[in-house]
Length: 255
Image: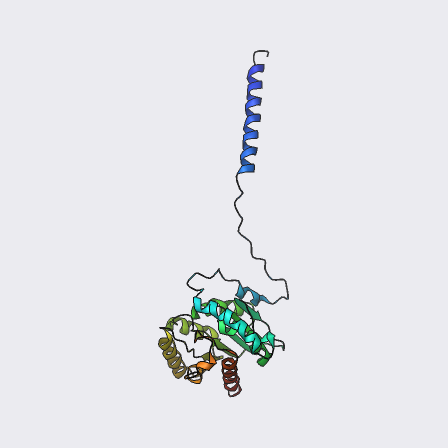
């Protein structure tokens, strides 16, 4: 028994040293960051808020001209009759002031920047806008809105996209299939970008082959009107947005 004591004491000391070393390493080694778990919306809450939480935009999506639009929008505080018409933000989701939802708007920085004005003119509209958004984003957005029953009963959809990149026929067909027989209004974009003509032609062809697709000819309304834009010739100023919104309202009233 006496001969075993040194060995037991040695083992105990070795174990104590090992535990102290592990504790020291634990204090010095940063714990891995856990992945945030999405919190499901509470019962009765409005689910479409999830549409403004996509992955962070890439550097390509954060185009210079779109960032300029945010800067230019600040100038409109001095022109727009109400400061609330202009939003200085990267994204927006606005729920209608008058229920139920009658119109769904999905757009890019043009809708985002002037979302307050759109909400004023269309009080029963649900608005979803994001700076730099491309047309392909409409597919996951519509999926979320459908799953959350936001599209239920809505017969009118206004799409203000195409400014930030090419629109593939496959994405257009996929969206029209998802939207079903709803009345779809495409705002035909006008901008000095290489894909402008291709997007415009696709929109025209789509309207010509689908009875439920209608065009808002912003491209024609703004032609030869540099006074409708800020310096980037892409984003409408207060004068230009009034023309666009009026054209949308007129088209909706006829269908």
